[in-house]
Length: 223
Image (cartoon, rainbow, N blue to C red; front, side):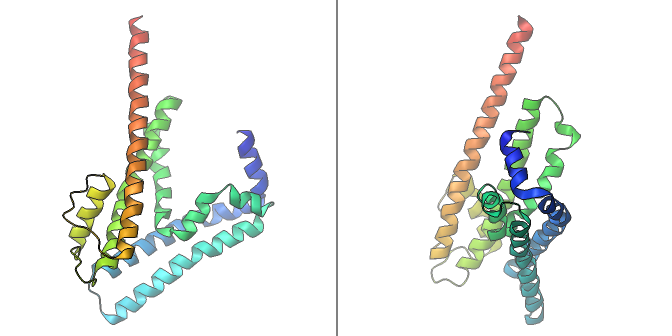
C-alpha cells in the first residue's frame, strides 16, 4: 500500500469502508435497473401505464446514488479531503449509467489474468477499455436518439441509426452519414468523440507496451 492509499484510507475511515462494502452490489443493481428502464423507455413504444412505471424506476434507481454519496461524505473522517481525492465517486453520482463498469472487476481479477504483474495489469486495462467502450457506445446511442427524435431535420430516428452513429463516432471514423442536429445531440457527440480519442490512445499505449515487453523477452531468451 502506498502513502497515498494510506492517506485515503485515513480520510475515509472504517465506518465509510463498511458502508461502501454494504452498498456496493445494491448500487450496481440499481445502475442496471436504471439502464434497462431507460433503454426500454427510449427504444420501445410502451403504453402510458408502462411509461409511468419506467419513470418511477428511473427516478428511484437514480436517486440512490446521491443518497449513498452523501452518506459516504458524512461517514468520512475528513470529508473534504476524501471528496477531492475520489472524483470517480462523484462521476457515478452524476452519471449512474457508468456504474455497471464495476462488474468488469470480476472479469479483470479472474484467474485468466493472473500472470506476471505487468501482463495482468495490461490485460485488466484492456478489459476495462473494451467494456467501457461498449457501454459508452450503447449509452450514447440511447441518449442521442432521445435528443434527436422529434427534432426538425433530424436523420437519427431509429435505434439502429443511432447505434451505427455512436460506433463510427467513438472509433473516430465519422462517415458523416448520420449527424445530430440538436444542441443536446451535438454535446453528446462531442463527449463521445473525446472519449473515443482517449480510449484509442490508452489502447495504443497498452498494446505498444505489451509488444515492447514481448520483444524484450524474446531477446533475453536468445541471449
